[in-house]
Image (cartoon, rainbow, N blue to C red; front, side, top):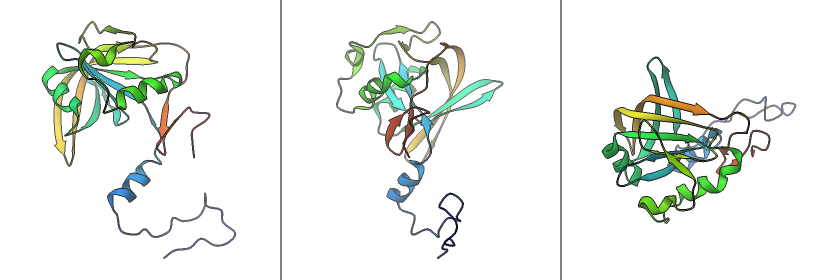
Length: 183
C-alpha cells in the first residue's frame, strides 16, 4: 500500500492503493464528480419527467446529446415510445424541482406536472420547464444498452437559454451551486 510522505498534503499526495471494487465503492468514487442537473421530459398522451445528471453533449456536427437511463426507470419506456424528448438544464433555485422529479413515489402522468410551470416544446411537444437556465429539444437517434442502463442519443432539433443565473450542481450526493459546491 502506498502512503504519502508526511510533508505532503492530501491534494498533492499520490492516491493510496484501492481495496476491492464493489458497487458501493464505485458509487462513492463517482459521487466525487460534480455534474449539472437536468430534467428529461417527454410529451404526448403519457408525459413524463425524470431528474438526470447522466447527461452530456456528444457532438456539435451533427448537434447531439446523450442521457443515461436505468432499465427499470419509467423514463426508459417513455423515452423509447415517444422518440422525442427535451432536456431542461436546471438553475440553482430549482433544487425542489429536481427533487420532485427524482421522487419515485410522486404521481405519474400529466399530474406530475401539476403546479410546475411549463410549455410544450415546438419541435417535440415535450415539457420545457419554467425557470430552467437552458433547454434542448431532441429526436431520439440511437440507443445502446449497456449494463443496467441504456444510453440514449438525441439529435438536437432546437435549443434556447436564458441569460443570468447559476447552474444547479450535484456532488457527493448533495445539491449545490458553483460557489457552494459541497466537498
